Image (cartoon, rainbow, N blue to C red):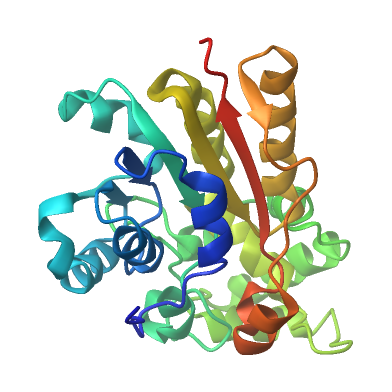
Length: 296
């Protein structure tokens, strides 16, 4: 399979194994990105149809180019997956055979410093969808000290949240914080590096989650999925941090207890050691999968 340089898809073989039980069905790739997962599935299953969703305009353009050879079997829509039900309704699709969501940030978003996700970025944006209003710069420069501390602790698990928030407020009193580099340097003044992980990692994670309302979007997707899946349809989620994984785990277990789902993964499935070696960014991936009970 040709690999796009846009983003290297994670755990493609495992995704195919757990997602596809109807090779002639319709699946929704809720996080299309550059089309890596979809390309793998379309190539492996010649009768499969894919609806690809992504809120990032750059991603949908890249995916259209990478999936051009499958044009008669793929439909690409720029939309947030929180609106998956509306997408299906607009396409007059009552049920699908699979739903895939890879909740990670794409390599392109991280590596393109103009997108404002990174520690060296000249901007402080972090919006996956440019149509969104408030960006990370707005939050950093307008939110109160207590609110910032709570944000960093709740969404980032940052135990230095209070001194970091205090340092940010003091720094912005002198001048507005407008770049990822400025924010990272401000954090480093009160939290020193230990090991390989950058001191500002959890702060940047919290801001990205807040800007893109990621946890609310995930909850909407999980709530809508049972009604959209056909009997025997499957859902696969790849998550990358404990907040996401906890939401997915609790939803899957709760609906399995109610008899709606059958758990295909009793525990998370991690990437192989070989994949981690080839793609270090895959190391934190956690795959969970369910199947909608046939009787429903």
